View 1 (spheres, rainbow, N blue to C red):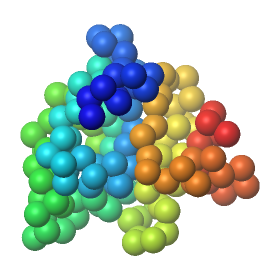
View 2 (cartoon, rainbow, N blue to C red):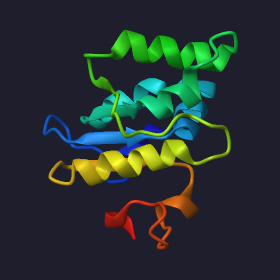
View 3 (tube, one colour):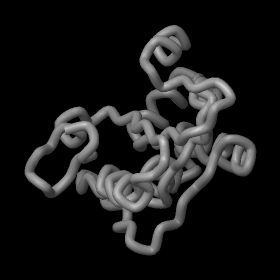
Length: 136
């Protein structure tokens, strides 16, 4: 799995940049016990507060608990949770997590950003209601 990340253009060893992840990415990596792969990309991992709520809000679930612990352990050491005031609340099935990533990318357009999302339809959405403009 690490070869996939290293060969994908996501890696920038010691050169900065940010890596935004959605809840599906966090959940998938947590299920595989591979959350630390995100830290190996050489980028600051940014998780919006909406994504954090989607992926780690119910710590009675083992995966949510694993994600919450990983975020807490690594916050300030490669992981940042961004609490943007304009982020929508986490609502199951709403794509609000992806919307929060879109808001972050729009307000940080001068940063070197990469987005990892399991929702390819949203990323490529050309309707103006979602998606990451730089990837359309």
